[in-house]
Image (tube, rainbow, N blue to C red; front, top):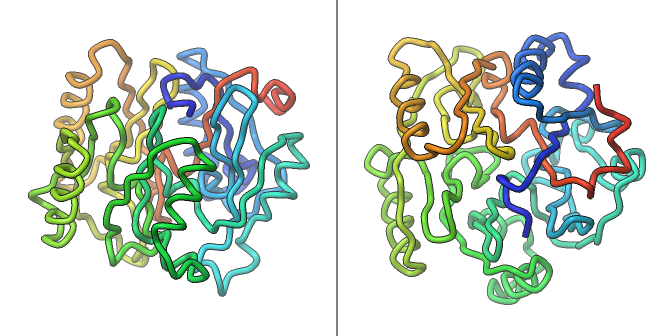
Length: 292
Protein backbone atom coordinates (compact mmCIF):
# COMPACT_ATOMS: atom_id res chain seq x y z
CA UNK A 1 0.00 0.00 0.00
CA UNK A 2 1.31 3.46 -0.91
CA UNK A 3 1.35 5.70 2.16
CA UNK A 4 0.89 9.47 2.09
CA UNK A 5 4.54 10.32 2.66
CA UNK A 6 5.46 8.36 -0.48
CA UNK A 7 3.10 10.41 -2.65
CA UNK A 8 4.34 13.34 -4.71
CA UNK A 9 1.44 14.44 -6.90
CA UNK A 10 -1.94 15.85 -5.85
CA UNK A 11 -5.11 15.90 -7.90
CA UNK A 12 -8.23 17.97 -7.32
CA UNK A 13 -11.60 18.01 -9.00
CA UNK A 14 -11.63 20.59 -11.79
CA UNK A 15 -14.73 21.97 -10.09
CA UNK A 16 -12.60 23.20 -7.21
CA UNK A 17 -10.88 25.59 -9.60
CA UNK A 18 -13.94 26.57 -11.65
CA UNK A 19 -16.72 26.90 -9.04
CA UNK A 20 -16.66 30.48 -7.73
CA UNK A 21 -17.51 29.21 -4.24
CA UNK A 22 -14.17 27.41 -4.03
CA UNK A 23 -11.80 29.24 -6.37
CA UNK A 24 -10.13 31.23 -3.59
CA UNK A 25 -9.52 28.04 -1.60
CA UNK A 26 -8.05 26.29 -4.63
CA UNK A 27 -5.66 29.18 -5.25
CA UNK A 28 -4.47 29.16 -1.63
CA UNK A 29 -3.87 25.41 -1.64
CA UNK A 30 -2.16 25.38 -5.03
CA UNK A 31 0.13 28.24 -3.98
CA UNK A 32 1.30 26.22 -0.96
CA UNK A 33 1.95 23.20 -3.18
CA UNK A 34 3.84 25.34 -5.70
CA UNK A 35 5.96 26.84 -2.94
CA UNK A 36 7.03 23.35 -1.90
CA UNK A 37 7.41 22.13 -5.48
CA UNK A 38 4.65 19.55 -5.18
CA UNK A 39 3.08 18.90 -8.57
CA UNK A 40 -0.69 19.06 -8.85
CA UNK A 41 -3.41 18.75 -11.47
CA UNK A 42 -7.15 18.69 -12.09
CA UNK A 43 -9.45 15.75 -12.73
CA UNK A 44 -12.00 15.80 -15.54
CA UNK A 45 -15.48 14.31 -15.31
CA UNK A 46 -16.29 14.92 -11.65
CA UNK A 47 -19.63 16.02 -10.20
CA UNK A 48 -18.48 17.44 -6.87
CA UNK A 49 -15.24 18.58 -5.26
CA UNK A 50 -14.77 15.66 -2.84
CA UNK A 51 -12.50 13.62 -5.10
CA UNK A 52 -11.00 11.56 -2.26
CA UNK A 53 -14.28 9.68 -2.07
CA UNK A 54 -14.74 8.53 -5.67
CA UNK A 55 -11.11 8.05 -6.71
CA UNK A 56 -9.29 4.71 -6.27
CA UNK A 57 -6.92 3.50 -3.57
CA UNK A 58 -3.32 3.24 -4.75
CA UNK A 59 -1.76 -0.09 -3.75
CA UNK A 60 1.45 0.12 -5.78
CA UNK A 61 3.22 2.36 -8.27
CA UNK A 62 0.83 1.37 -11.06
CA UNK A 63 -1.83 -0.49 -9.10
CA UNK A 64 -5.19 0.98 -8.12
CA UNK A 65 -8.34 -0.46 -6.54
CA UNK A 66 -11.58 1.31 -7.44
CA UNK A 67 -14.54 0.65 -5.16
CA UNK A 68 -18.17 1.14 -6.07
CA UNK A 69 -19.22 4.70 -5.30
CA UNK A 70 -22.84 4.73 -4.15
CA UNK A 71 -22.88 6.47 -0.75
CA UNK A 72 -26.22 6.40 1.03
CA UNK A 73 -25.98 10.10 1.83
CA UNK A 74 -26.10 10.90 -1.91
CA UNK A 75 -28.97 8.54 -2.71
CA UNK A 76 -31.29 11.50 -3.33
CA UNK A 77 -28.67 13.60 -5.10
CA UNK A 78 -27.81 11.77 -8.32
CA UNK A 79 -26.48 14.98 -9.87
CA UNK A 80 -23.68 14.97 -7.29
CA UNK A 81 -22.73 11.31 -7.68
CA UNK A 82 -19.60 10.95 -9.79
CA UNK A 83 -19.27 7.80 -11.88
CA UNK A 84 -15.71 6.57 -11.17
CA UNK A 85 -15.55 4.56 -14.40
CA UNK A 86 -16.24 7.69 -16.44
CA UNK A 87 -13.77 9.76 -14.43
CA UNK A 88 -10.99 7.18 -14.65
CA UNK A 89 -11.51 6.75 -18.39
CA UNK A 90 -11.44 10.50 -19.02
CA UNK A 91 -8.24 10.82 -17.00
CA UNK A 92 -6.61 7.69 -18.49
CA UNK A 93 -6.32 5.85 -15.18
CA UNK A 94 -6.62 2.06 -15.03
CA UNK A 95 -7.84 0.27 -11.92
CA UNK A 96 -9.12 -3.03 -10.60
CA UNK A 97 -12.84 -2.62 -9.90
CA UNK A 98 -14.65 -3.95 -6.85
CA UNK A 99 -18.41 -4.27 -6.27
CA UNK A 100 -17.93 -3.31 -2.61
CA UNK A 101 -19.46 0.06 -1.78
CA UNK A 102 -16.72 2.07 -0.06
CA UNK A 103 -15.67 5.72 -0.23
CA UNK A 104 -12.01 6.71 -0.32
CA UNK A 105 -12.60 9.09 2.59
CA UNK A 106 -13.37 6.03 4.68
CA UNK A 107 -10.01 4.40 3.98
CA UNK A 108 -7.09 5.60 6.10
CA UNK A 109 -4.06 3.61 5.03
CA UNK A 110 -0.66 2.39 6.08
CA UNK A 111 1.59 -0.03 4.19
CA UNK A 112 -0.05 -3.23 5.41
CA UNK A 113 -3.16 -2.04 7.24
CA UNK A 114 -6.10 0.27 6.73
CA UNK A 115 -8.66 1.86 9.02
CA UNK A 116 -12.32 1.91 7.99
CA UNK A 117 -15.36 2.87 10.08
CA UNK A 118 -18.25 0.52 10.69
CA UNK A 119 -20.30 2.54 8.19
CA UNK A 120 -18.99 0.05 5.64
CA UNK A 121 -21.41 -2.57 6.99
CA UNK A 122 -24.60 -0.56 6.47
CA UNK A 123 -23.35 0.52 3.04
CA UNK A 124 -23.05 -3.13 2.01
CA UNK A 125 -26.26 -4.81 3.24
CA UNK A 126 -25.78 -7.77 0.89
CA UNK A 127 -23.08 -8.96 3.27
CA UNK A 128 -24.99 -10.51 6.15
CA UNK A 129 -21.67 -11.86 7.39
CA UNK A 130 -19.47 -8.93 8.41
CA UNK A 131 -16.40 -11.15 8.61
CA UNK A 132 -16.82 -12.10 4.96
CA UNK A 133 -16.87 -8.44 3.92
CA UNK A 134 -13.72 -7.70 5.92
CA UNK A 135 -12.03 -10.79 4.53
CA UNK A 136 -12.76 -9.71 0.95
CA UNK A 137 -11.48 -6.20 1.66
CA UNK A 138 -8.27 -7.57 3.15
CA UNK A 139 -7.71 -9.82 0.16
CA UNK A 140 -8.36 -7.00 -2.28
CA UNK A 141 -6.18 -4.44 -0.49
CA UNK A 142 -3.60 -6.98 0.71
CA UNK A 143 -3.76 -5.31 4.11
CA UNK A 144 -5.22 -5.81 7.56
CA UNK A 145 -8.54 -4.00 7.98
CA UNK A 146 -9.08 -2.31 11.34
CA UNK A 147 -12.69 -1.27 11.92
CA UNK A 148 -13.39 1.72 14.16
CA UNK A 149 -16.74 3.20 15.21
CA UNK A 150 -18.20 5.97 13.10
CA UNK A 151 -19.53 9.22 14.52
CA UNK A 152 -23.27 8.61 14.34
CA UNK A 153 -24.13 12.24 13.62
CA UNK A 154 -21.63 12.49 10.75
CA UNK A 155 -23.46 12.33 7.44
CA UNK A 156 -20.58 10.54 5.70
CA UNK A 157 -19.39 8.23 8.48
CA UNK A 158 -15.83 8.57 7.19
CA UNK A 159 -12.61 7.71 9.00
CA UNK A 160 -10.47 10.56 7.64
CA UNK A 161 -12.18 13.11 9.88
CA UNK A 162 -11.36 10.99 12.93
CA UNK A 163 -7.90 9.43 12.71
CA UNK A 164 -4.75 9.22 10.60
CA UNK A 165 -1.72 6.95 10.73
CA UNK A 166 1.46 8.43 12.18
CA UNK A 167 3.24 5.12 11.76
CA UNK A 168 2.21 1.48 11.73
CA UNK A 169 1.46 1.35 15.45
CA UNK A 170 0.50 4.96 16.18
CA UNK A 171 -2.56 6.97 15.24
CA UNK A 172 -3.17 10.70 15.30
CA UNK A 173 -6.81 11.42 16.01
CA UNK A 174 -9.43 13.63 17.54
CA UNK A 175 -8.91 14.13 21.27
CA UNK A 176 -10.54 11.09 22.88
CA UNK A 177 -11.53 12.89 26.07
CA UNK A 178 -13.44 15.52 24.10
CA UNK A 179 -15.30 13.06 21.87
CA UNK A 180 -18.62 11.28 22.37
CA UNK A 181 -18.48 8.64 25.10
CA UNK A 182 -19.46 5.78 22.78
CA UNK A 183 -16.73 6.72 20.31
CA UNK A 184 -14.10 7.15 23.02
CA UNK A 185 -14.93 3.75 24.53
CA UNK A 186 -15.06 2.08 21.13
CA UNK A 187 -11.73 3.53 20.11
CA UNK A 188 -10.08 2.44 23.34
CA UNK A 189 -11.13 -1.13 22.58
CA UNK A 190 -9.69 -0.86 19.07
CA UNK A 191 -6.41 0.58 20.37
CA UNK A 192 -6.07 -2.22 22.91
CA UNK A 193 -6.99 -4.99 20.48
CA UNK A 194 -4.49 -3.85 17.85
CA UNK A 195 -1.78 -2.58 20.25
CA UNK A 196 -1.99 0.94 18.87
CA UNK A 197 -0.71 4.13 20.47
CA UNK A 198 -2.69 7.34 20.10
CA UNK A 199 -1.71 10.99 19.73
CA UNK A 200 -4.65 13.24 20.59
CA UNK A 201 -5.21 16.21 18.31
CA UNK A 202 -7.49 19.03 19.49
CA UNK A 203 -10.66 19.75 17.57
CA UNK A 204 -13.14 22.57 17.71
CA UNK A 205 -16.90 22.08 17.98
CA UNK A 206 -17.84 25.15 15.97
CA UNK A 207 -21.26 25.74 14.43
CA UNK A 208 -21.67 27.66 11.18
CA UNK A 209 -25.15 29.09 10.70
CA UNK A 210 -26.83 27.70 7.60
CA UNK A 211 -24.25 24.91 7.18
CA UNK A 212 -25.26 21.95 9.38
CA UNK A 213 -22.57 19.66 7.92
CA UNK A 214 -19.73 22.17 8.45
CA UNK A 215 -16.26 20.71 9.03
CA UNK A 216 -14.86 23.89 10.56
CA UNK A 217 -12.81 22.72 13.54
CA UNK A 218 -11.67 19.34 12.16
CA UNK A 219 -7.88 19.63 12.16
CA UNK A 220 -7.19 15.93 11.55
CA UNK A 221 -8.38 16.19 7.94
CA UNK A 222 -4.99 17.51 6.83
CA UNK A 223 -3.22 16.75 3.55
CA UNK A 224 0.01 14.78 3.85
CA UNK A 225 2.08 14.61 0.67
CA UNK A 226 5.81 13.87 0.57
CA UNK A 227 7.46 15.98 3.30
CA UNK A 228 4.58 18.46 3.50
CA UNK A 229 1.79 18.47 6.07
CA UNK A 230 -0.83 21.02 5.00
CA UNK A 231 -3.09 21.55 7.99
CA UNK A 232 -6.40 23.41 8.04
CA UNK A 233 -6.69 26.43 10.31
CA UNK A 234 -9.93 28.28 10.92
CA UNK A 235 -9.21 31.66 12.53
CA UNK A 236 -12.59 31.71 14.29
CA UNK A 237 -13.47 32.46 17.90
CA UNK A 238 -12.08 29.84 20.27
CA UNK A 239 -9.86 28.29 17.60
CA UNK A 240 -7.00 25.97 18.48
CA UNK A 241 -4.97 26.79 15.39
CA UNK A 242 -1.70 27.64 17.12
CA UNK A 243 -1.93 24.67 19.47
CA UNK A 244 -2.45 22.27 16.57
CA UNK A 245 0.34 23.74 14.45
CA UNK A 246 2.76 23.50 17.38
CA UNK A 247 1.72 19.92 18.14
CA UNK A 248 2.04 18.72 14.54
CA UNK A 249 5.39 20.49 14.19
CA UNK A 250 6.58 18.56 17.24
CA UNK A 251 5.11 15.26 16.02
CA UNK A 252 6.58 15.73 12.52
CA UNK A 253 9.97 17.38 13.23
CA UNK A 254 11.36 16.34 9.83
CA UNK A 255 8.40 17.69 7.84
CA UNK A 256 7.14 21.13 6.91
CA UNK A 257 3.81 21.99 8.53
CA UNK A 258 1.94 24.62 6.52
CA UNK A 259 -1.36 26.13 7.75
CA UNK A 260 -4.06 27.14 5.27
CA UNK A 261 -7.54 28.54 5.83
CA UNK A 262 -10.14 27.13 3.44
CA UNK A 263 -13.27 27.86 5.46
CA UNK A 264 -15.13 28.47 2.20
CA UNK A 265 -14.76 24.72 1.61
CA UNK A 266 -14.97 23.61 5.24
CA UNK A 267 -18.44 25.02 5.76
CA UNK A 268 -19.69 22.59 3.10
CA UNK A 269 -18.53 19.57 5.08
CA UNK A 270 -14.95 18.71 4.14
CA UNK A 271 -11.35 19.81 4.29
CA UNK A 272 -7.94 19.17 2.78
CA UNK A 273 -7.92 15.38 2.66
CA UNK A 274 -11.48 15.37 1.32
CA UNK A 275 -10.75 17.61 -1.67
CA UNK A 276 -7.49 15.93 -2.68
CA UNK A 277 -6.30 12.67 -4.22
CA UNK A 278 -2.56 12.28 -3.73
CA UNK A 279 -0.62 9.57 -5.54
CA UNK A 280 2.91 8.40 -6.11
CA UNK A 281 4.51 8.90 -9.52
CA UNK A 282 4.99 7.38 -12.05
CA UNK A 283 1.58 5.80 -11.56
CA UNK A 284 0.00 9.09 -12.57
CA UNK A 285 2.44 9.87 -15.39
CA UNK A 286 -0.22 9.30 -18.03
CA UNK A 287 -2.36 12.11 -16.62
CA UNK A 288 0.26 14.69 -15.74
CA UNK A 289 -0.81 16.69 -18.77
CA UNK A 290 -3.59 18.00 -16.54
CA UNK A 291 -1.02 19.83 -14.41
CA UNK A 292 -1.77 23.54 -14.14
